[in-house]
Amino acid sequence: MTYRFLPHTADIRVAIEAPGFEQLLAEATVVVRGLLAGTGRVEEREERRLTVRGADPTEVFLRYLQELLYLFETEGFLPATVDTDRFAGTEAVIRVSGEVSDPARHEHQPEVKAVTRHGLTVVRGDVGWRAEVVFDV
Amino acid sequence: MVTAQIAVERIDAYRWRVKRGGGMRTEGLIFADTELMHDLEGDQCVQQVVNVAHLPGIVGPSIAMPDIHWGYGFPIGGVAAFDEKEGVISPGGVGYDINCGVRLLRSPLTVDEVRPHLARLMDALYHSIPSGVGSSRSDVKLSPRELDRVLERGARWTVEHGYGHERDLECIEANGSLPGEPDVVSARAKKRGATQLGTVGSGNHFVEVGYVAELYDEEVANRLGLRAGGVTFFIHSGSRGLGYQVCDDYLDLMVEAARKYGIDLPDKQLCCAPLTSPEAARYLGAMNAAANYAFANRQLMAHYVRKALAKIFGDDVAQQADLVYDVAHNIAKFETHEVAGRKRRVCVHRKGATRAFPPGHPELADRFSDIGQPVLIPGDMGRYSFVLVGTPGAFSETFGSTCHGAGRRMSRHQAKKVARPRNVPRELEERGILIRAASRRTVDEEIPEAYKDVQQVVDVVHGAGIGRKVAKLVPIGVVKG
Image 1: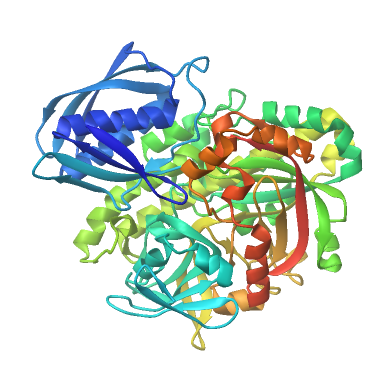
Image 2 (image 1 turned 30 degrees about the horizontal axis):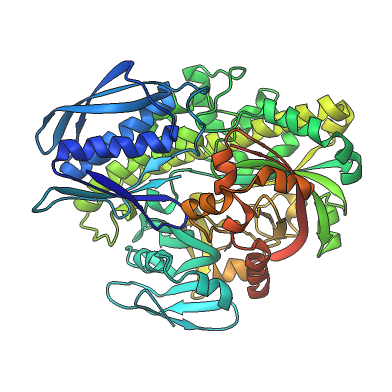
């Protein structure tokens, strides 16, 4: 599993690779956690259960990331780890473990407004999955 | 010159044409000087100008302002007008931060009077206007019914509740109120917006104390209450989480709509619906509601600027802190423009662009009818900002639009790398600019050199006749998210 930041003038553009879709979500969670909490450690203290649906894996991926931003903005919830209980192409049932942001341990980061569809790709290749996504900041 | 395999030819000192090709329905028109144009190499924003030119019903060129940079869907700094019957509306042409915009207040104080009290003033501003990611207010709690009223009435709701004066409304684009429809705003969006009214947010948003450093048109400046050395307050913010969620919700709808109406998209973020469709009507109602939230948000922050002034300098000073103007720079609006000799009603998308109506436009309040609409162009936190007025040139060439700011030239990653070994707040303090920030990361990402020189941007729009310089403002204190 790996991710790297790609050039973008104003926003955050990331490429993520993983052997399976479930791992792709896990790696994307690491990216989002960094954008929301920086390098501060996030403990697995609470769990949120999510069911995300979309027309295809790209939309499922997008909606999962949107849910993470929504949980952070409305509850201050930071993701630590993720387990995908079920993924069936157009639906994923996911458990996200994490904790509510603690200003003493989690440095304020610039706001991530949204996950965009600009250049959004989620593709399955010979050796696994690859996603590219731009976050509006 | 060729930018990312796109043929761009120079028209004159300030204009470049992107030739029509492929599926483009019109050509592109970029306002820039040679140096700004070179800055765009390696950036995908020119491709985004091309992409916008593919959309159905586009009227006139796909336009880019000199502060153009790579966005999502539309470029930041993009303007496009669409025919009311043949055209489309695209949430990607407005952006997530619906009615992100700026407002400027002037005070009766001079910079010399404020300097000795600046640290206290900055502390008062920092503590009375919450900033940073997810910032919220505990003193302005909106019931679901009150939030709906904000979404319907915008800045008028704020004034009706004692946060400002009736006069303020005359000095806001659209009088601070658009026909918003709370019923088409989702519960998720309302949840995100419930506690954020009166907060500045993060990223490039700010509250800035500055002073008038230079006058280019003293007569117009005086009409706006701007005098050399006079202290001003810039507020840059938008519709916060509520607007982001409205955009997200309607992008979902527009992806389906584009498929339903058979619209080919060069970028999915440009998903859209015909302006005559029910999907467009719903988005317009929700977008206007979010725009109203943003108008109310900036109005409420202006109230707290006045409270901070009252705390440090007394009630008399606060009561004389008048609004110069408030403009949106992420919005889509129906307007009437003359195109090829005939008047047409079009939906003008401005994404990172400012309305710049000329003298005599019927939408302007009487106080601006002979000078044109004030246009507020913030720069970076270390240099300067500008006040302009709208011109007939903007009305005839750019659907009454001009630039909106400096525009980024450095990625956030690059900016952090440059700033990491430095202490940027201290550097700025040594130059007489006090910073109060919720996050050092934001300050690092927003270092002055991460932006184009806004003077250069403004000189292009002034030279091209799509805006006219009135005054230059220099910062002395900035609250960042």
